[in-house]
Length: 253
Image 1 (cartoon, helix red, strand yellow):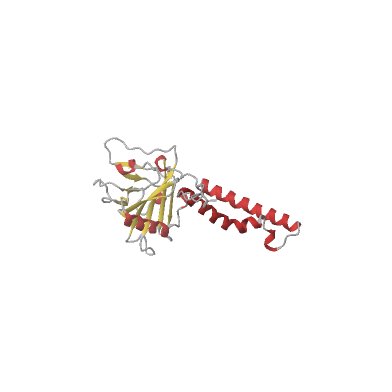
Image 2: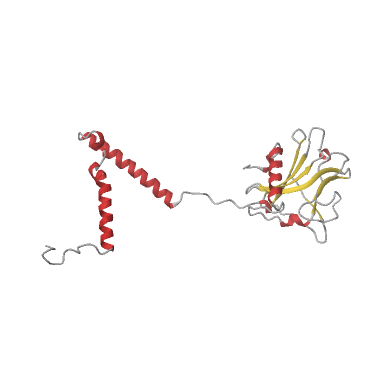
């Protein structure tokens, strides 16, 4: 698990693999982890990057749409692109949970972003920030996102856009401690080891050798027989077989 979503540059193979698996397994707009991201499904999102981040014409705007079918997207339904140059960032593939620190929305351009990439990934990294809410105005289908970091690595065919968002704060899984049974087993074996070590040392100091150094050696050798006799006695008691011959007659005597 990655501790910081802003360090996702260079994770193109991992992101692509997770996107393919998530798309194959089910709903690409459903993720578990306690996130509150329904607001993100209610608009087409626009980012106004710095002019040096624009791919073609300057100034520019980037548009992203996922998990809705609004037809007003200038890039096309479910797509991402740069305006006004119409440079495509690709189609939305899936949402991917990244633990309590956030999640990402992946867009993949299978035609490639340059001559070295068979496909180019753009990731919206929604990073947990309890103080940063995202709202949508009334009667609008296009709303703004305000990223804190944009990193493009053409060599690794990935662009990561970090957006702080209070709804990206997932639930922290409870710590997995030892169960009561595990604790009891550990205590049992520790006490058994102490018993054996102290007993062997004591018996050895008193002249015992070999198996006789085991503490209570005679008891442990007789234990199987004692268990058998105990079981036989128990069976006789519950089946009322005990003392049948003791009736006070001559044969009983």
